[in-house]
Length: 273
Length: 306
Picture (cartoon, each protein chain N blue to C red):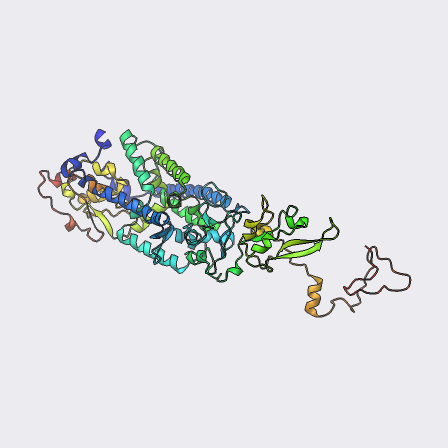
């Protein structure tokens, strides 16, 4: 066994070479397919309650950069971040936090981003208020105490960007007929997704949750235009005086004595849908 | 057969137990060190090393990054931050000097599992059982990893890499995962075939093996004239095919250096050789002049070359 057979080793026939190459390519191809399917299956299933650290790039970019070293976890002063364990539905070894358990405290110096050696957490994030870890959404609004007309307001109070990321929008309380309802309303352009609101919600199961942007936000079709925005941009109506025939709206019954008076909001007085 | 099951007995007799296990002990210490250094921080609060084998920061000054992971990220089109680049260069340079697969035998936590499984196979007389794969398999695996990384835009091997999984699970205290990964690897290595994971499949080892093709520190069979053909080195070597070209290179006018990148510089051959045929040397010392004359031994080296 110790003695080698140089003649056999050093001279590779074309047939052997092609055979070995074919075996290798097929084997490697099969292995690559298997690995690829593992990757594809794992990368698409980030659960909605697993929030990436601040500055995390979009999930596809994140997985091209994150080496799962845990340096962000080590440098998080509040133990917010952890690495996903095997068997969890998050890609094993990648950092995340669950806001209901420990939310992000939004450190001014963002130590997790500073610690990241790979660019998975984007160093261009220098102001934590610009972070977009997710968007808080009042998903359980029917259970929200404020929705019942109570003044819980806890999510609003704990929000690091109070009156910016969460405001209380007033509407009439139809149940009592004389009180107001203050509905916690999240403004996605300001919300960082820190999850303080989710953590603080007093319900057994939180009514307000931080969700990844892809789940939390709707998106208008690119061809849609808001008429009032376009009008504002132009400074005047886009259709007035262009000879466009305005057909009568359904339910509009013109008074016999000519046109109705226009209201200040642009509609017609006496309009009944 | 019983000799193959118990290699190194002659060396223990000749040199004493400690000298016949010197490199093995040093290697185990090194492997433990590479885990312990990462555990100092979480256990004591003094952060000696943060991170994992994938990427780490020592005392807030020394960044280290696994070059194989770095390259996988690179083929996805992502260029890492300066710290990771510096870290990858330092690690690659270190293995260039110390031997590519020094990672496998001196750092990788899986090596302890692989060695244990291989030891048990030897004791059970299972040395030849299991699947036999061509030595080039791991290179194909490595190639497939790069292609998959490029196509999926992810660091593909890290989805399944048991090396970093095990290290990370130990360092971050995920003990169930430690048991799961090491148990699975142990079974694969025990039943699957001899060193089937570490020397036939693992693309990390294949990558460092490529580095080993040019690395500086090498094992030399410099006293090969004293070899008494006891075969103990072949029995313990995790890559036994690397030995012959150097040890039996006399007739082909080959130098005494084990040049193959597959060699992990584990030093077990130094341990188990009762004649101290092997020593650590440099790639450059591979001339026939570097073979030391046989002193003191009754047998003559030329006799065995025939």
